[in-house]
Length: 172
Image (cartoon, rainbow, N blue to C red):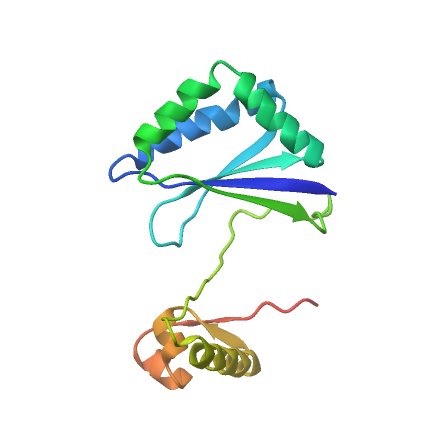
């Protein structure tokens, strides 16, 4: 069992390219510091975000990684540079990998995730609506490509507005 730590970095206005360059350089040199890291850019979100992923073999390795960072003389200036380029504090998350990808599986090039947050006091109503739309879309064999189509009661209004639907992937 291994663990993945994700650190989300939110650039200040106009600082995205510079933040990306700093993060890319740090990530490229990670093997020399004894860690396996990656850097991804979230394409569909509320704003630009760069997410660093760090693989740890176990929780002891996670703790050791943190201790190595604190002992690394280059880490303090790196963090200071990041802080000068970011709009807000980074968001940290630690995940336990339950089923790792098989060696035969191709490496994905991107991920897509949709998050919906109901207005205050509307959670039950929103939940019912999203469940019914999910069931309806599953039966139709497609999912709406944007939130306007999700809010539409029928696919004909989505098609009439020029929006597209995409077929669901089904394992063979």
